Image 1 (tube, rainbow, N blue to C red):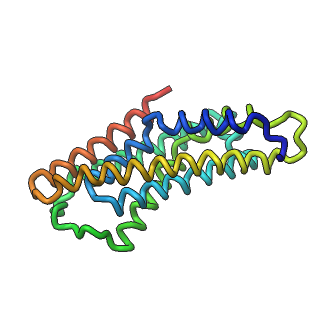
Image 2: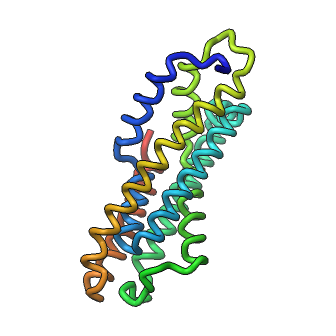
Length: 208
């Protein structure tokens, strides 16, 4: 179909890669621990939406431009790092009592978590480069439908990755629920999540 080859191998490899901890899973874990299941699920869906953007961008060749231009790569890389650091610093210095937040997030809070998860993923150029390096290996060189093949493989990878991210959000929020009822511990969780985001941003900015 669409010149896709070894689809079973692709799915198996993709699942293993999704299970490997990375910035997205750590972001969702921190969000869920600090703010609950609603924010975690919204973040997971936002990350999935960001992956869809990367899939489409790779399919139409935008990722090739990013890979070929050192300036474009650095611009996206530092923008993503700065956004993560911004989110982390905002949480570190927030004076709002986390324990007072409702157990069911409002639509605006969920929308914010979704948006932040999506932006965090979209502004990570390594994800774009990964799509460029990984997906073409499973597309036949003589395929006449490379765009469709790219989209099919990318969406399959997004589906398995989003399922795993939702599992992370679910189970880490259960763990967080045990602590958020205590105001002091809840504030510490918020600070810890903020420190985690700052660390992710610094790691992205300083990595090769």
